[in-house]
Length: 168
Image (tube, rainbow, N blue to C red; front, side, top):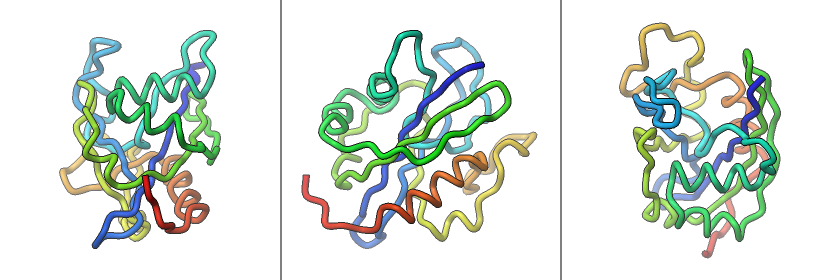
């Protein structure tokens, strides 16, 4: 069984409000040298496997560097990460954490080759989401396609983290 860890980053954007920053899955998996499964779907901001002997926090920071760049890691190291959920999906189990960052972190993102960008998701967007595991022919451009365990983590994160005054 593969074990993974993810981080959901929330932020408050002027004129939009509280959003979850979701990563859009790219078309290529550079680590495994193959097409990406569920391309075009969304996942938590950072997600990946835990390597042998690696702590959860080190795995999150490594994945953050690979997927969003080292500037994001230096920001994350100063933040508290809150455990949201644990899940099992097929041959994979995982833990999802969350944190809130000032929206200016978005300007510091340097995407890795497996990422197709970000999608800003509000609580009301969840009502229109579709289950990514049930899509057989890809994801339409303006569809929020997420796994059911990701939706559960998003709902919980929006409940736990009420908007606050963020100053980084």
